[in-house]
Length: 98
Length: 382
Image 1: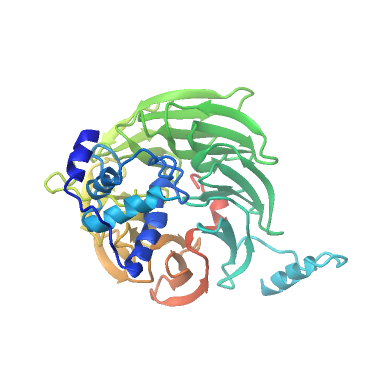
Image 2 (image 1 turned 135 degrees about the vertical axis):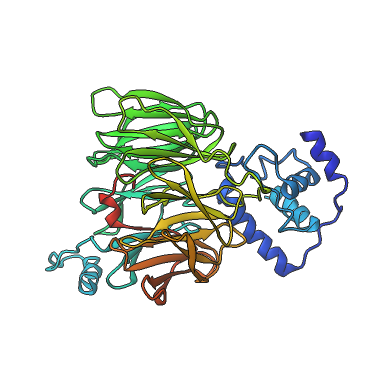
C-alpha cells in the first residue's frame, strides 16, 4: 500500500501553488470536511490523527496521493473529483505545518 | 417565554428574589456550535436563541441527550468530554473528560445512567446521571459506535473494527454484557426503532444492514439489503450517513444508501426492499416529519446546500429546498409543524414551516451542527 502510494505520488506536481481565495476554501475544507472523520482539531476519530506531529514522517507527495485517491477498504474516499493535484499538495503541506 | 428570559437575565444580578415565573423547558433546545465549543439555548415558541453556554471543548461531531425532566442535557464531545448542562440556569453543572476521543452517548430509560461510546480507548463507559461518577467501564476491541438505550436500564452498542454487537444490562449490582454476534464488516452506525423492537446496524465495509430483534430473548443478526445498487458503480462517501434520524414511516424504513445517491425503502416486517428514490446526493440524515407521510433528507459535501422532501407513499421527491450552505442537521418540532435546519457555513439556523415549506424565521449561530429539542427526553433511542 505504502509503496503504491509513493509510486502514485511520483506523478504529482512538485509545487503547490493555489490562489489565496482558494487556499482559504481549502483550509475551511480541512477543518470542516476532513474534520468530520479526523476531528476538528485533527486528533482523529473514525479516521486517523492528522496533526503535524502524527504526520511528521509522512511525505507530502504520499499524503497528496492518499487525498486524491483514497485508501481502498477503508472509509477514506478519493477526493480527486473535488480537488486538483496542486490543491491536494497544498493540503498535504498545510497538514504538515503546525 | 420572553418574560422568563428577561427574568433570567436579572438573575445574574445578586440580591434579586427568585423569578415569579419559573422557566419551563418543554419548548427549549440546544444547538451545537461545533467550532467554538459552545451551545446555543433556543426557544421554539420565540423562534430564537435565548442564551449561550461556553466551555464544552471540541464539539465536532457532538451529540446529546436529555434528562427525563427536560432540565439537564448531557453533551458528548469529540474530545471525550461528557458535560451536564442545566437548561434553566444555562450553566455547566458537571463535566468529565472521560476518554481521549468519543462519538456519542445515551441515557437509560429511567434517566439514572448516562453511557458514552468511545473511540480511544475503545469501549463504553457508564456514569451516574446525577454527578457523572463512573459506574462501569466496558472496554472493546475497537471503536464503539451506535450506542442506544434499551428499556430495562440496558444499552446496546457495536464495534466498528470487529463488527461485534453487545447488549449490556445495568439493572443489577453488576453489569451483565451479552455478545450478540457480528453484524458485518465495518458497521458505521446503528439505531433502535421507536418501539425499541429492532436494533439496526448500517454496514460500510460490505453492502447491507443488519437487524436484531431486541424483543427476543436471544437476539440474532439478520442481514438485509445485501445487494442494493449492485448494477452501478459506487460513489465516494464524503460523509458517513447518520442513523439516529433513520425514518420509520408507512410500515417502512427509509434508509440512506451508502455510496449511492439514493434512499432505500424497506418493508418493516419482511425486510425486503420495496423501492428506491434517486436523490440529490449521498444522504446523511433521513428524518421523518412527525405526523406526516414525509421524510426530509440532507446530503454529504459537496452537495450539502440542499434538502429534499420525499413522500413515503409514492417514494417520490416532492420538494427540493436550498436553505443555505453546508446544511448539517434538521430537527422537527415534536408535532411536526416546523423544522429547524442548521447551515454551518452561513452561520445560521433556519426555521421552515413544514406545510408551506417556506422559511418563517432564522437566527445567527456560530457554525451550527446538531439541533436538539428537549422533547427528545421522552423518546426511546434518543
